[in-house]
Image (tube, rainbow, N blue to C red; front, top):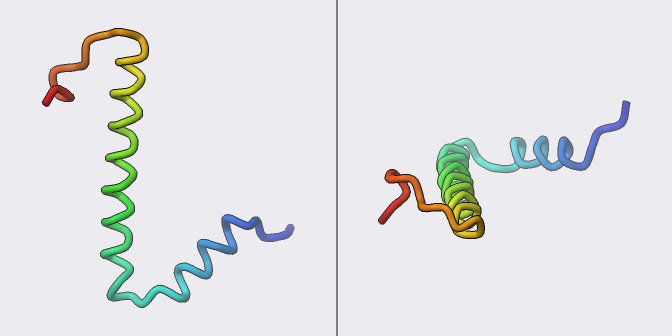
Length: 58
């Protein structure tokens, strides 16, 4: 079975990113992903006209 493009990218990233920066990279990606998911959720509620849940209000 051939390697997928995503798998090739993942392998190269794991091999080329120094171990010291790997933890920072993973944490930065995690923060970006959670922020993106939160923005998408807020947009979903606003589009439907529903009030935001209490934990998402600013």
